[in-house]
Image (cartoon, rainbow, N blue to C red):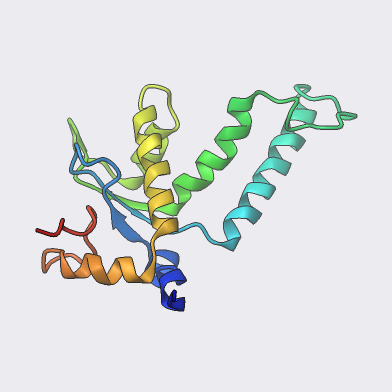
Amino acid sequence: MAKLAAFQRDPEALSKGVWINPDPDFDIELRVKAKDALFADLVSIGYRKLIKNAKEDGRLKSDSRSPLNDLPPSAVANVENEIVLKYITDVRNLEDDAGAVNIEKFRKMAMTEEFRPLLDMALVAFNLATNRRASDQEEALGNSAPSRRTASRGAAPQP
């Protein structure tokens, strides 16, 4: 029989965010909040703003029946991508020539084609945090170094 606790989402991922390593080939960690009910509201507001701006600047006819379908798919996808990046609240173990990359710079670079892999990592981290269960947090805590609240690479394999 399934226990109800197996379906409880990680409360810390929903409220404060958790550190996630989205790519095991790198030590980059992103602090990310899980997708919540507000996310859908923010996406809807973003789509409305996109449609309004497209009508105002002539990219979209005001009588369009399916305005999102009449816009370039990249413009529509960018609305959600920008909101996902707002759910990424911190970054660590990422440097450029000037030193550590802060979250503002990470978000800006992630929205460029040149640094698209950063956006891909953010999307992976967002999905991992969203699917994280409370039981995952307990398991991760048992396998993390004492200085961290959660382990970013998941549970250690069983011998």
